[in-house]
Length: 125
Image (tube, rainbow, N blue to C red; front, side, top):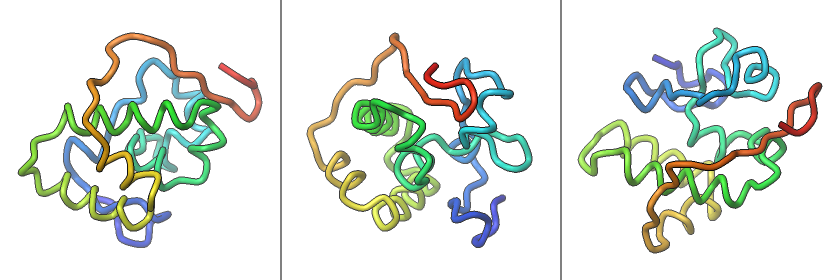
């Protein structure tokens, strides 16, 4: 479980706390912030909405943010207490970019496609 002062990440110890990083190899994911200091994947919703590196890493941040909200709705149970805690934190830390998307009409998450990111050493991937 993440402690409250540990780099501002939410306190989570469920499926929502350790999300996959997709097909991004660990050697590329670490330098952009997709892995924490222990080499574990960070929460993908927290990274996009609450971590300043999220906007730097994703050239199409708006599209990625929209997709993360669609995934959040599709992959989570409404009565999940961990989800409620995450949403509460992101409403505060993520602000309007998070709350506006959450309040918008639901969208279906993509099942295919590419997600571009900018790596500090390798450039755009």
